[in-house]
Image 1 (cartoon, rainbow, N blue to C red):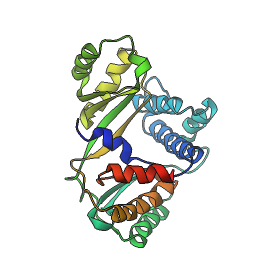
Image 2 (cartoon, rainbow, N blue to C red; image 1 turned 135 degrees about the horizontal axis):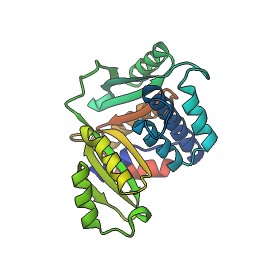
Image 3 (tube, rainbow, N blue to C red; image 1 turned 90 degrees about the vertical axis):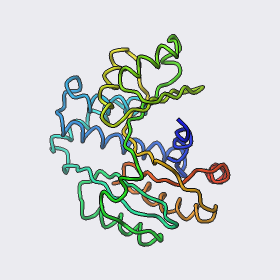
Length: 253
């Protein structure tokens, strides 16, 4: 499990708290619409949609906003959304994996290419970073939701459901699964009636790269450009979040 706690810190935000929440809501609302479009608007029969709605509730998104996102899947309320990914390198050899949801692919690829080019990076070809990132399921559970359970017994149950790593924290517990086991773990937690605060597929680097602070800040500047774009859902990278860099980010927030 080494490195996963630091991975949580990698997904930083440098904007104010209200802007952070706004970006999170935008991302989840798009996930809800995509899920409904792919598998239908019935929450009970569509596991992907059920998970997206659950994440929305965990982020305190209003019920009517969630319902509008589901309705949008029919195409009645706007353009059809598409999912797309881009891979490339930031300055100093840091790998960048960008996941997007967009209603205009030409606009999105032009913006992504521009961010790379203008910030000392380069856009690569899809599949070029497969050797750097593993796609894993990550389930985030509040400690309160499992306070009446024995941790050792829980871990055994979760392993049976597909978990390959479990990290018990003071406030939250993280469950990691292989990409293929994401659905079975979701079903396992539902059967156990354990409420999940958030669950998603993340691209976790096999190893991280440490670079000098001034160079790391250049990389973070590029990451910030991506994160500010409404078409961008997630940005993953393999920059090592050192204590020194984490302190700088904390002071800038």
